[in-house]
Image 1 (cartoon, helix red, strand yellow):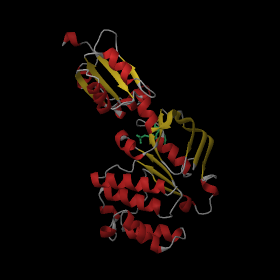
Image 2 (image 1 turned 60 degrees about the vertical axis):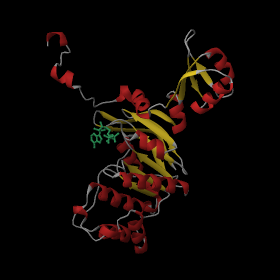
Image 3 (image 1 turned 120 degrees about the horizontal axis):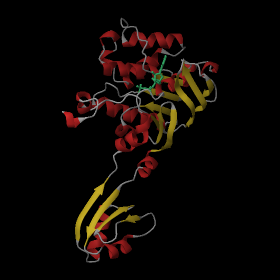
Length: 316
Ligand SMILES: Nc1ncnc2c1ncn2[C@@H]1O[C@H](COP(=O)(O)OP(=O)(O)OP(=O)(O)O)[C@@H](O)[C@H]1O
């Protein structure tokens, strides 16, 4: 469990984290999302004592990180700044970590296997690809068999097989009752992996919710149905958990809470002709961008804006 209470972190004039209040629970994967510079890495660094909060408290498994007697066995972290000696082999790196933390060498072999690095364990870490480096970082995070795992952008640089591996690994770790807190820019990947989402922008909490709730609040999955008798169809479809909207005088209804298939069956059973039946799923990326639009610090400009910064296209 990670308990972050009124966390503030400032670097000079810059407030990287602004009064963040969240609890990351065990037994589920919690996705940590936000635009570039939102304060995700800073927050994670404070959890493992790499950054001191300006104010507020951060506890992991009930204590401040520094108060744990064997922190690597409490919290495993993959953070952006890697401290791997490039001349060392993957095995050598993990062995050195294990030796300094009283972890048996058999565990090194184990995590090398889990991370899929068995064939390259003797290779210089400096020659590793981005994806192999990520796997080594994750192996190091798991070395102490920690109850809480923090991963900053773990899918960065991984190929599709690696992305799937991470998804299964995180889900498995959570199923074992561990706390899994993972940052990512990939909303669609988080939707598949996480149950809870913490979304930040400019250091502030924007949402602390479940993936299901987030989808629902963003408009949920709906079905558009155009038919010969929308008023009668509406009456037939209405029921608990079903919401139907549609402008008067049009043949189109927007239905949430029922599948397109179920609507088609009801229409057919009641002799109503269906002209259109379209399932619409909300794009999570779109919902995320709507939520964080005002918090994005690093906007790119469109090609048109770059060509004509004054925005006066009539002169062109
Ligand atoms: N050591 C530092 N000194 C000064 N400013 C910093 C430092 N670390 C982070 N910042 C600033 O704090 C803000 C939050 O940065 P942080 O890296 O935590 O964001 P992030 O959400 O992890 O971003 P990204 O998605 O790009 O990795 C940024 O504006 C960043 O420039």
